[in-house]
Image (cartoon, rainbow over all chains, first blue to last red; front, side):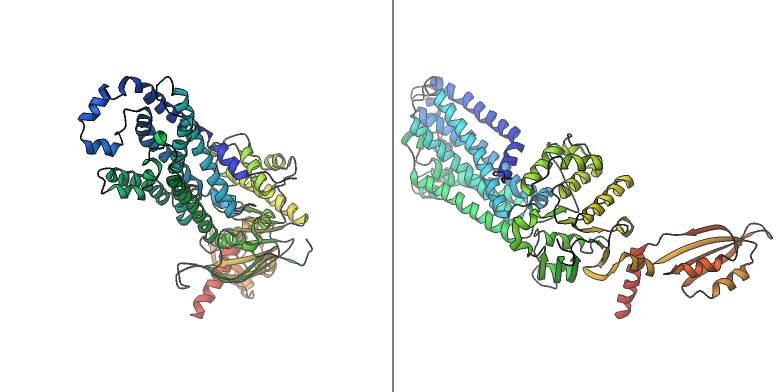
Length: 268
Length: 318
């Protein structure tokens, strides 16, 4: 009898389809609400443009609304940088903290690890399951942006949509893998949640402060949010340095999770 | 599995939490050996270290000191292939989620199989658990049955069952004990724990008594029974209290004797209560001389008596 391929991955996906569906609907709804509004409110002479021009410049920078009058700027600042960002971070936090810490607190991890599964395999398969679900959300975003591109007069290119989606996914992965690592280190869901959501909030704040002036701009280099969106990938294409940081840190957190879970006792 | 070999061997195993041995200690230098193909019971009050011992065997936790061998391998280096050969029932089984019992068991079969076709249904039928209901809607007893099915279904050479009878009603307990006997007859080794000896004394070949992280004794169940204390109560017609006292005076292992007359004056019944330690034979022969109208011999509470015995010894040592 052949050993089944990736049994823990398949179980995680099978058990989470409802939640994945819910997040998918959330992402789709956000895009369907925002993007079609662009023709009526975008453009330099539009009402939205005038409204933005009258807002305090610090607020506009903090929200990333400087470039809201272009299709790429509008899409990035309303979805990828704001509502979509919140959605993927919350999804990443809830999935990643359930994968190890939540499972351990519920007592189910003990029984799983008592079977013919190594701890490394468990961390890697469950990480993969979270990554695949986040990638799905990024893919859904990309598909909706491209589908609405012409009707909403966004004028974005497919290559740039891929670039911003990769950054968007990377940002979700940083939260998710940190949540997994802290869960593997502590076994406590509350710590994992604080870390996964905390890194996103902290990154967002650093980026918002960094966008206030050119002297503070360097702060954005320390923010995962800045790595993803500082160089506006939807308008100007992939920021390879930023992507390397996002995916590099994610990989490092996965390694941490594997080492941490292999070394410690599992709580009963 | 050849008889005579050892399925589980613990030598000087300690487990403590915190940095120093002076921290909270769950196990204190345990030595234990379980013969392959036998049924070995571990008895002790809650917190004695039974669950800790079992979790060490599965590499869920690691020992602070000492060495462990399970089916010839050390649990950590044995890894998944060793655990594939062990069926484990955790002491506190918590099953949640929307999945049905069947799909949960199929999942465990994928990560510990192979499971023979029909094995899951056969075991579920024996224990009387419905497989098509979501596990979170099941009662504690039914969850426990699912836990037993997942431990037995791939016929592992070693079964490690932590409080297997907890939550099971007496009929299912009996079925479970039959499953344990069949497992032993098929050459499987069964290592189980309970805080109530009477639940497993019918099936265990040997028993280890644990108290506060130490093994106080390892013995056969028969050996325990012989040293156990029974409470007896009897009523005699046509016998004066004095005659009864004289008849029972010569029995060395009888204590706490209380004799009194109930009923009205002459024609009343002489009642006795007493404690008999170990062999019951002399007591029964002695009372056979009278007309017995009432007799009760309490089943020995082996665990309590053994713990008392060793508790007293431990106090005496100090």
